Image 1: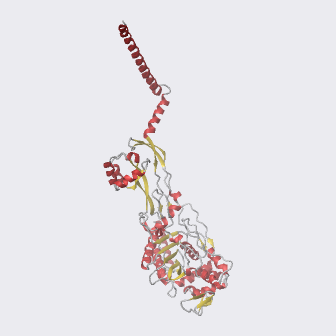
Image 2: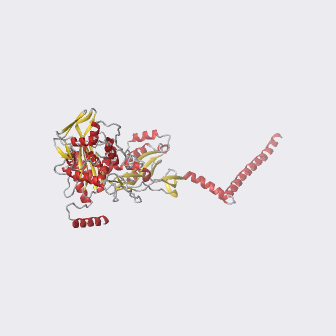
Image 3: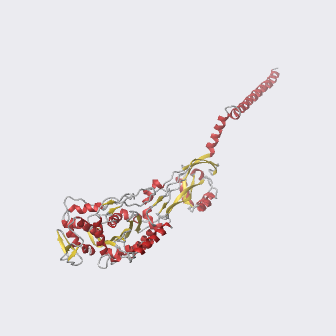
Length: 586
């Protein structure tokens, strides 16, 4: 009986359970249908659709940075000096790349021109990261070779690499950028904010391997940097660089530099340095080769300031160009030092003191001047203060000021010892003489909207012209700077031969050869300074080593700038000027 009852109960329980499960499944299906209806059919569907869309985007859409183009640098005539070119940098997600097979990693390392072991070490180093660079700044062909392997976790991004068409010719002035295209030295550093662009942002669709399959909206356009136009004239820059390099090599010198200024505007037209380096490939480059010596190095100018001392004497009114000065017996004794000329010049006038670069004559003049008057004149001419070029590390020089000057200090100061200048400061001082006493600001950069600053009168015009006439005698056969002469043009300038400072004071056998001058002397256009440091050959005088560089460069510069020679008659000179003006317009 009991067995019969059990058989009757079991079917009822089974049907009840089946019905319950079926009902639950129907309810779940109904809930799913209602949810789908809510998302897609009912009024709330739009919000649901946006939710699903956002979730989908979160898994497939990424925001990538758009690299910004760095502004170009050009010379005054528009010739490219620095330009950024598009390149590809390869990067990887180490966590994905570590899952690749040994064979895939070996092929990847080969394509990257790396050793498999080196790649493995990099992967291990960045194993907890999601980003690491594989290779930077590859050409599209090189990057394509790697990407064609289709290795999971390897990607490419567009960047820019700086290229310098002029190479080592203007390297120290321009400087260079780092691998991220940020200025590190020179004008690239000084004007980094001006040249740098603003990166943009782009939304892209990625596939499961992280590859971009579709570009979407641009969230922010990349803003390119602004171009920079320099005052440099590359025609003169090449010329100065070539002659300077030759002089440094022929004289076995340690280094050298040359600066050329436009006396009409104060623009720096050339700034060459030796030794130099290739900014496009800086492997193994010595730090000393990167230094822009024309603005950073300080040096004692030596006899190149003797004409400035003569100018101070003229300003007193007690001296004239033909005022006699007795230099007999060829030397002068001061407390602690005897100053000697090359020979006994006897009684000579102020002009010949400059022509022969007489130490005795200048010393007597210095001792006759009020001690601080000479320093005050030097300062008016721009010595002892920054020229305001904006170049990183520009030296201001040292212009000492003393309450009491000892006789030997006054003498040394008058012929260029005991003070320091940079090359541009000295060129600017000579430019004042060339401009008949007017001082113009020095500039490395041209600006179309810049209003030309009014020149400042720091010296009376007649006195500056008298010193110019003295400087012309230095270039004559009787002067120390005859090798700076340029056929057909009147040249004004002064040589300097400076003893270098060693561990025990001034060295007897180490020199710095200097020449400073301007051309044409009767209607100045260019002022220049040449410095050759530590020549090791038999020649070391400024007139033998530095002056020939000035002469060679200026001869070429007069042709390039189409400056007519001095001996042309007025009518011929006018015609030459007209032809020059037509050449500029064309």
